[in-house]
Image 1 (cartoon, rainbow, N blue to C red):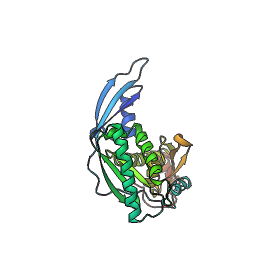
Image 2 (tube, rainbow, N blue to C red; image 1 turned 90 degrees about the vertical axis):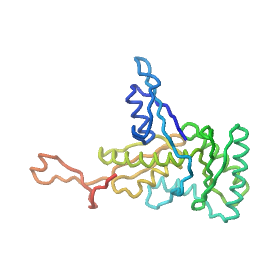
Image 3 (cartoon, rainbow, N blue to C red; image 1 turned 180 degrees about the vertical axis):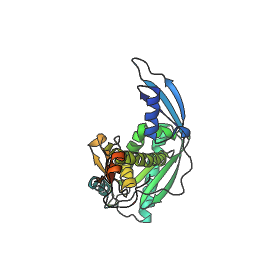
Image 4 (cartoon, one colour; image 1 turned 60 degrees about the horizontal axis):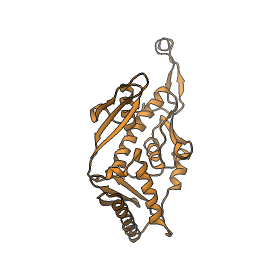
Length: 268
C-alpha cells in the first residue's frame, strides 16, 4: 500500500526536512515530489510518498503499563485499562464490531475484508482493501473517530469493557514504527542539547507509545502536558553532575556533563 502526504514550509528544503521528521523516515525510504516552489509570498509544497506492507504482522507489540513511567502517563494508562474478557465475550465483541464496520463500509461505498488478532485481552481488527486508506484521514483522525464510535457501540450496556483497536491498511502499525524512531531521535536531542523537547499533539494511544519507548532510558524522562487536542509529550533530560577534571582537560574541553549514577553512555 502506498501512502502520500504533502508538507508546506518556507523553502523546499525545509518542507522536506519537516516531512521526514514528521514521518520518522530517511530520504532513502521515500519518494519526494516538489509540488510548488517557494516564492516571495508563498510557501513551498512537497509530496512525500512511501510504501507500507499489506501483510498482517506475525507479532504486534502490546503497549504495557509500567509503574515507573511519569505520573501523567501512568494515569492515562489507568483510565484505559480493560477488564479481562472470557473467550466467549471476546468472540461476541468481535462479531458485533465487524457487523458495525461492515455496515459502515457499505454506507461509505468501500469494499474491504476484516481480520482480527487478540493480543493481551485487546481486540485488534484490520481493515484490508484497495480503498481503506479513505478511513485513515489526517494523522489517523478519521480512523480514531470511527474507533471511538465502534467502542461505544460494542460496549453499550455491557458490564465488562472490551477495548477494540481498528487499523486500516496497517496505518497504526507503520505509525507506531515512526513514533518509536521519533522518540529515540528526540530523546537524543534532549540529552545532547540539555533542554526539553516538546513533540506535536498526539492522542493517548500515540502518547503511550512515546512514554513506553523511553521509560527505561536513563538519560531522559517524559511527561504529558496540555488539554484535549493540544495534549502532547515533553521529553526532558535527566539532570547530571558537572565534571571539571584536571586543568588541561578543562582548558581543552570545558566542563562536561556526566551521569551521577555511573554506567556507560546510552547509545540510540
